[in-house]
Length: 306
Image (cartoon, rainbow, N blue to C red; front, side):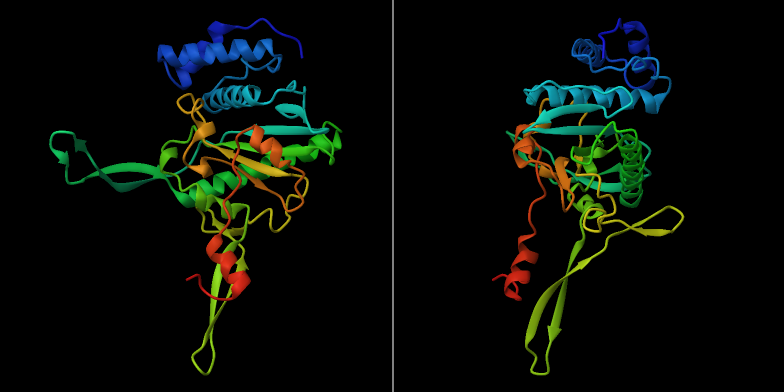
């Protein structure tokens, strides 16, 4: 992809209209645009497609993930025309990443406790405050729908031989632009990709208890009340997708997300037969879901941990 002449004025105008007019923010994204243009990662319509709020945020999100990846991968990164947003080689295998940025999530009002502390007076009693957070059901439906749509995109890539089943094919879902993303239960999101561990207790005639683990499908409920099964990777619903990279990244978190204390704000969920190399995850500072030690103990010992 050739380096192109950038219409910076149009780019900045779109950010001002649809995202922020803060000078620091405008300078930040302008510098990312110039850098990624030099790296030949921008398609010819990159700026012209920033015609509304959603498309503008999608482009800004792509710049962030471009920057995140180019900082950590030491091989050349490409952006294929009519193909995945990012492509690079790692350990003799092609890695493809398609980026999607969900935005429209129903908000719900919640009551939070706000704590304050003074060096002179010590801690004060918490005060209640109201806030809005993404409604869990709406968020899960949005994640599920964006995943499904990008799986269809990969279907087309495979048909047109833009990617191969031998490649590592990844969908990156950046939730960093969802309002109230700090209040998302990121760990609970894992069940969209993995089954839930249900603990089954059996009591015999002599009142002796034994325990086992049941792997249960996770269901997402639409606003209409319709339920549908997810646990996509354990159910092998998308075998051509090796993993889904969930990241919460925006202009405020780009420099810190690699070292975040919250493992699930930057995590890779892998398919059962995934070709994702753990060394690549380490290079990209992407976490893997933590094991459920409680359930694993029951699976092994058929008893509760002591």
